[in-house]
Length: 354
Image 1 (cartoon, rainbow, N blue to C red):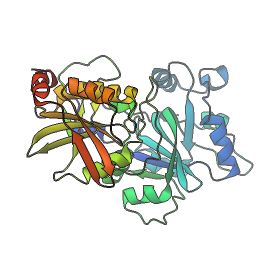
Image 2 (image 1 turned 180 degrees about the vertical axis):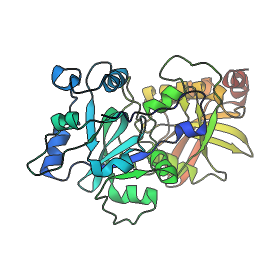
Image 3 (image 1 turned 90 degrees about the vertical axis):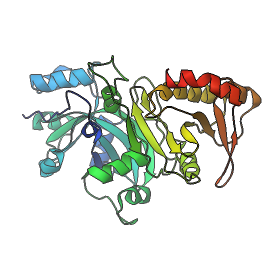
């Protein structure tokens, strides 16, 4: 039974963030729908005797490291997919498809070959194939991304049916991850966000801000989930289309910002929110103040991007910290409510960490 779990060690480089995207047909046949209910819709207690005795000590150790509660969601593949699955590792993104859309997004945890475990998780039907490769899911959240949207992201025909399993790499994988604005737990661990800082110094990294897509992926940020809620996607897309310069994002030890702009008016970091209530505005403010000291260049402006004008209370909260508000007026039209200059200048030392 071969352990296929792989992971980067040592210093952080661009290659450490090069995740693959696994596209998994998972809800087509009656059998696959049963598998979904059994091992995706609910967690499986792998530390119980019926499974634990079939796992190698290394496989069990890896599972317990990633899922210390002793239970996890699982999916797998038959031996005919061995070549493709040999590329997959912890931290890669899995898109579970069916009914002409992506139904859920997950993050690959432990991955290994163990036919006995696979047969317990997914008993083969008479004359059917046994599954062969097994992988756990660190995170698993519902989604509703039509095939047409996914196909557009990776440059396929809009009528492409995603009938078989795919492993996307390089530009295609990046287009999906950026297009759906996915941030995995593994990336945050490499950024030292999810656990105590590791040895050495982290270098802030900039990343291209790819075109964003529809708001249909609903990711909830909780203590156990690092695939973010991205209802802000269409707002970000629309706003970035109005800019005269290319918008980017940057990775830092505290996460990934929404928009990073370096233009004639200086450097600006923008955090987008889909709603204007106090809780959302306060969260955006705290994120901006957290991101700003890690900006690749000293920050000149901070701003919160929202779909509607803020109430006076929320606007004053931002202005108190020298932060602008940008709100949508109509299609392709945005208005900025700038913070007072004296307040912005007062706060810049705090932003830059100097």
